[in-house]
Length: 183
Image 1 (cartoon, rainbow, N blue to C red):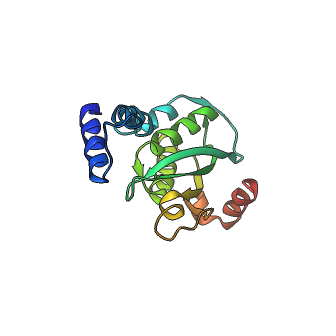
Image 2: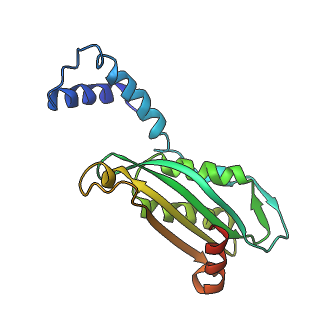
């Protein structure tokens, strides 16, 4: 990440909205924003699947569900935050992954300019590709500040998205079981 370009852009932005970038409250803002960008966009250029590579052999064939994984991301259309919960279920096929690794994978994908639908798909694809389970299902519920504080201005509106891979695609019963487990 190029901190100097970010600082220049923030300075121009402040000028563009009619602010004085030299006033006391704003003088250090370009530097603070550059630091913030390193944190909230830290997933750019990072391989999110690296966290899934440490697996353990398992004869488990029942669904594994990790729910209510908090995330924060930034809408690529308005550069405003969206945030919420990710729920993931998969059916192992000989191996499982440490639970914290699933949350770390979510975090890497979320720390990029993003749209919720794409985030949902990326998480499922990563788990399906690396773990090769019998199936995986991901559901995300999020509030988008681009809808809450601008435009339609409907705070509290939750957007849900989900995707199903493998045997979840063809089994209504498994999809239903996953949905019941995350309630």
